[in-house]
Every structure is written in C-alpha cells, then in structure tokens.
Length: 234
Image (cartoon, rainbow, N blue to C red):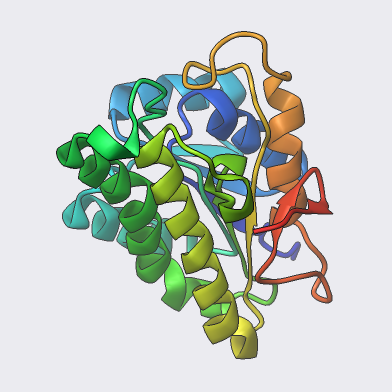
C-alpha cells in the first residue's frame, strides 16, 4: 500500500501568496488544507486549483477565533490523520498611511491579533500533530518590514506585528528543535497582490521561497529568516 502523502495547512489561502503556496505544495504531491475565513471563497479557491478535490481541501479558518482554529485542527486530525507542514500566511493591515508617533493603537492591536497571535494560535493547535510527523515544518510568512536593522519609520502596525512574528519564530525554533520541527520565517519580497499592490514581483516567485522552507530536508536550517532561500538579517 502506498504511503499517505504529507499534509500541509496554509492559512489565509483563498487568494494571493497563500493561494499560490497551496498550488505549489499540491504540485509537489502534498495534500493541502486551504484555510479561508470565508468558507465559500475557500471552496471556490480550492476548486480552481483542484476540481476533483484529491489534493486540495478547503476548511473554514479564522485565525483570530479560538473555536474556528480548534475546529480546523480537529478536522485535520479526524479527516486526514496528520499534519506535516504549517504555513502561517494570514496577514492584514499594511498601514502605509500611519506613523508610530500618532498610530491608532486599536489598528495596531488588530494587526497583532491576526499577524502574530493568529499564527501563534494555529501553531499551538496543530503542534500535537506536527510533533508526530516524521518531517515537521512551520513557516511563518514574514516581511522585510519586520527586520529591526532596516526600520526607520512607517507602517507601524504591520512592522511591529511582523517583527513580533520573527521573535515567535526564534522562540518556537529553539523550543521545538528537540522534536525535529524546523521553524523559519520567510519574506516573500514585494509581491503583486491585493495587499502589496501593483508593480511587485510575480506571486509565483514570492510563494516559491515559502515553499522552499516548507520542504526543507531534515538537516535544513531552523530559526532563520529567509528570502528566496537566502538568509536575511533580523
């Protein structure tokens, strides 16, 4: 009997980078859970990628809602029996109009709830399954805007949330190293998406760096920050 394929969970995946990450992981032979806050959009996105439903499965997932995250993790366990890769892609609020000196702190909290706590919440929910995987990986989709060495002002909610996500990456990598879980942050670069706007690189190129981290060999890096497979400064 053929071995069951690895299972990946991708958050915020009904469009943009997340949607392309799902496509590329499915092309690599993984079964992919396409997480989407809106279940109808998720089902349509999954059908575009895999009309037969053999490789891509849509699941409702609001990373800010404990019950939604728990329900997703339970479905993955009950229906697929495993989780090998988690890609924390869901993100909001690229606040180019804001400055730290006058930022609306409610907006900052909203960004942190999705971009940091959402990723944290999903990682905790799937960790029991990831620990049982022979090749577990967590990829946090971050941004150069979260690199402390390059910060100089602007996009305060987004930048602080992504810097915090980078810190979470380091903490999880250190704690999960004994379990063989490789945890890395990846900046996809400036990508032409609804959030990134026009003029960026093609979505497939930005997604490829995320997929690289999801498919690292067992002796690959952990606790790193990368773009296109090249290490970045924190």
